[in-house]
Length: 117
Image (cartoon, rainbow, N blue to C red; front, side, top):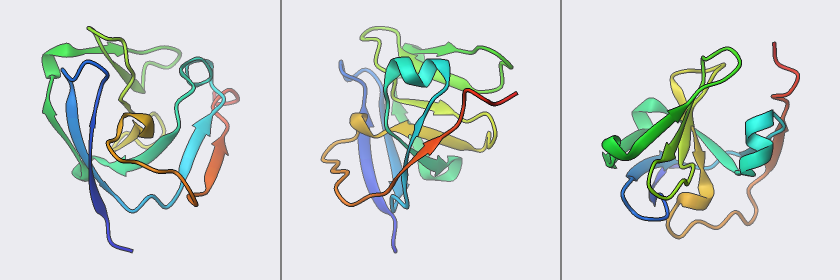
């Protein structure tokens, strides 16, 4: 299946990005931060991610092993994406930040983050 380009942004629009994906699956996670932000994510390789604008509006949060990089808009507080811990050359993209996205028919996999060392 061919990858399609999607544009995404935070709520206030200061952060904009693009991804290319064919949405093989979506994921949820049960770690302490993912439970609280309640995001539905798609995994994309760093070569399929492009930050268009807003680097200066990104606020980074790290916890536990300080390996994953969770990014938030410092103006509106929205979580658009994170750099993954186990696969650091991939991003987890919050699909609720994508324009025109519809999750219908895409399998959702529950990942176990709470039990990670």
